[in-house]
Image 1 (cartoon, rainbow, N blue to C red):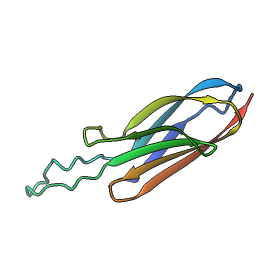
Image 2 (cartoon, one colour):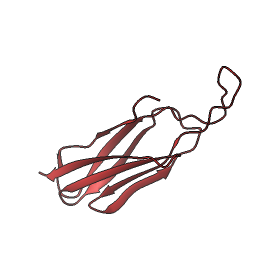
Image 3 (cartoon, rainbow, N blue to C red):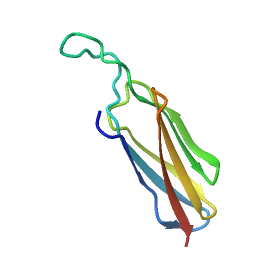
Length: 108
């Protein structure tokens, strides 16, 4: 499998109380477990099954992903920023691997 690479777009700064848009993309094949290889053997399921985003220790967005989600899942959501801090993102794979990314945001 190619290297799993999370990418995140968060504004560098925001005004207190501003609602910002956060965009995430992770390079991942999201194998559903329903396809077969050239020899006819099932390809094992391997998907990102959970995503969470925390801001200063508080969960601001979380979702479960299913096999129907396409490769390289893209998520976009909003969050209200009341203070400067750090967003922490985590993608959990079927095999227990956790891919993380952190991004800071300052107040204007």
